[in-house]
Length: 485
Image (cartoon, rainbow, N blue to C red; front, side, top):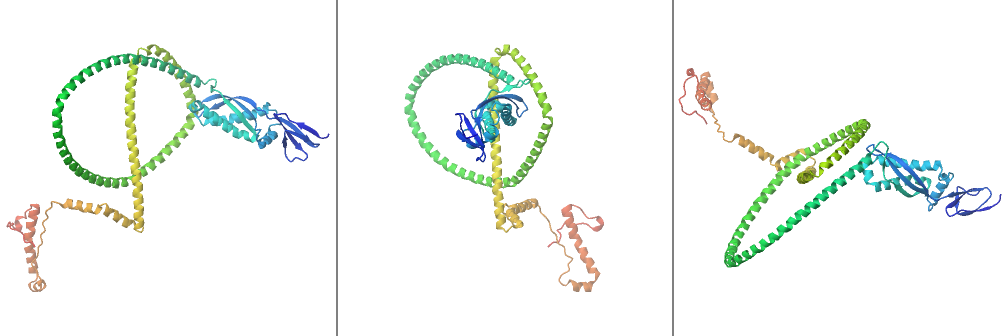
C-alpha cells in the first residue's frame, strides 16, 4: 500500500497514528504513509436528553428534565487529543457515550441538589442551572468535551409525591384571594374619596368666612399688640440673660456629676467584663454540646419523621382544600370584619416589632460597651503590671489606693464606733517609785491594803456600766466618783 492523501470534511478531523508519529497527530488534511493509520472523527455537538431524579436537603425527591448540547472543544488542541483518544473510537450516539455523559450529569446534579432545600432550588432556578453547568463542565474537561448549551426545564414531581402540585394550588388560591381583596379596597377608596371631596368643599367655605372675620379683628389689635410686644421683648431679653447664666451654672454642675458617674460606671463595668466573658464561653460550650446531640437525634429519627411528615402533609393539604372550598361561600360576608382585624393586627405587630428592635439595639450597644471597656481595662492593667516590674502585689496595692479602698475601710470603721462613749478607769494600789523599799519594811499587810483600796473604784465602775450593786456583806457605795487617772 502506497501513500494516500486524506481530506476531512468541515466538521471532521483526521487522527493519524503509526510510523514517525510519537502519539497522535490531528489534521484537516494530510498524506498517510505506509505504516500509518488514519481515523476520521466528527466534532459536531450532540443533544443529550435526560430526566435526572434527585433529592433535596429535606429528602424530598423530584425529577429535573434537562437537555444538554455537548461536543468536543474545537478551539483547544489538547481537548481534541483527549477526545480523539477517549471518545472518538465510540459512536457519539452509542450507549457507552450516552451512559458516560448521563453519569456525569446525574452525579453532579444529585450532589448539588442534596446541599440545597427545595425552596432554594425552586426559587433560584437560574443559579441552580449555572451551578450544575459549572460542575458538569469540570468533569467533562477530562474527556475533551464542552457544554455548548444546557436547558434545564421545570421541576417535576416524582410519582407518589405531589409537592409542586400542592404548591401551585396554594399560589392559585392566594392570587384569587388577593384579587377579591383588591376589588373591595378599590370600592372603599371610591366611596371614601367622594365623601372627602364634599367635606373639603364645606371646610374651605367656612375657612374663608372665618379668615375674613379674623383679619378685621387683627387689624384693630395690631396697634396695641405692637406696644405690648416691645415691652415684652425688653423683659424677655433681661430674663433670657439671667436664664443663660443659670443654665451655664446648671450645665457645669451636671457635667461634673456626669463625669463622676462615668468614672464609677467604668470601674463597675471593668469588674463585670471578666465574669460576662466567662459566662459567654460557658454558654457557647453548652450550645455546641446541645447542637451535637440535636444532630445525632435528627440523624436517628429523620427517615421515619420524613415518611410521617409526607403522609400528614398530604392529609392536611386535602383537608385544607375542602375547608377552603367551604369557606369561600362565607368569605365575602366576613371580608369587612377581616380587614378591620387585619389592620389592628398589623398595627400591633408593627408596635411589637419596633419595641423588640429597640430592645435588641440597646442590648447590643450595652454588650459592645462592656466589651470595649473590658479590653481597655485589660490593656491598662497589662501596662501597669509591666511598669511595676511584674509585681502583682504592688499592682494590687496601687489599684486599692487609686480606687479608694483604704479610705472606704477607714470610713466604715469610723462609722462603726461613732456615737460610743467609752469610760476608762485606771486603778493604782498606791505603790510609788519607792515601792520596793516599803514592801521590804511593811510585809504582806501592805499588799492586802493595796487590794482593799482598789475595790471601791472597781465596784463603782461596774455599777456605772452595768447597773449592778455589790452584795451587802462587801459594803455599800458612797455615790462619789471613783479614783481614776
